[in-house]
Image (cartoon, rainbow, N blue to C red; front, side, top):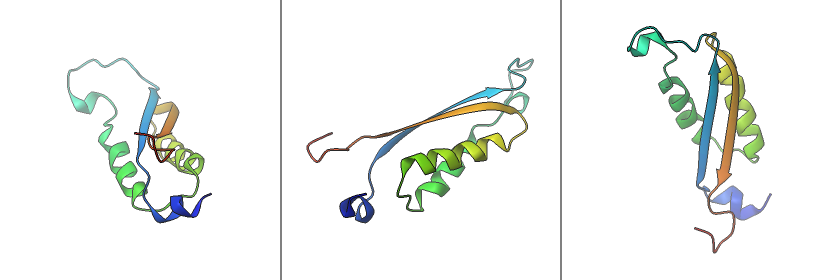
Length: 88
C-alpha cells in the first residue's frame, strides 16, 4: 500500500447487487421489498473510516448486507477510478 493512498482519499465506484429471498413484489410500495437506503447509509458510514484494502471494505459491506433477513446473497464490486495519477 502506497503512502499516498493512505494520505489521500481515493475516489471509487461501489456497486452492490443483492438477491432477495422473496424477489416477487406484490405491491408497488417500498415496504414490499428491501429498502436499499440501509445499504447506502452503511456505505456512507464506512467511507468515513480509512480502509487499507478495498477487499476488506467489500467483505465488510457484504457481511452487513447478509445480516438482513430479506437478502439471500450479495455481490459487491469496487473500482478505483483514479488508480493511476494520469487516470480520470
